[in-house]
Amino acid sequence: MGLVSSLKKAFSKTYRTVSVAQAKELLASGAALIDVRSAQEWRSGHAQQAKHVPLDRLQTTTAGIQKSRPVIAMCQSGVRSASAARLLAAQGYEAHSLRGGMGAWRRAGEPVR
Image (cartoon, rainbow, N blue to C red; front, side, top):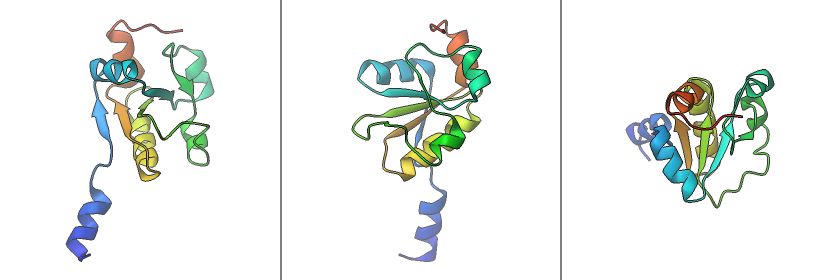
């Protein structure tokens, strides 16, 4: 592999950024939703079907997330979820990042616990 090919691969986006509507479609077809925010943020409200796996924990374990189904990462605004999706994609997951995070989820009127 040449230098240009190696650089393209290293800097290419390995996950998809999805809207709330696209995330709902993925969830309806069996995707997992993980919330990578801190414990305090999680306690302040989270998507009903989300599993809490803080980003720092995701760096050392996938916490039982199955590779056989797509994974959507969610945070407060979309920055940490992009890091989580990149990390998961590097481990072989079909990974997605929720654009706009919990803010977008709430604005779309989606259920929050």
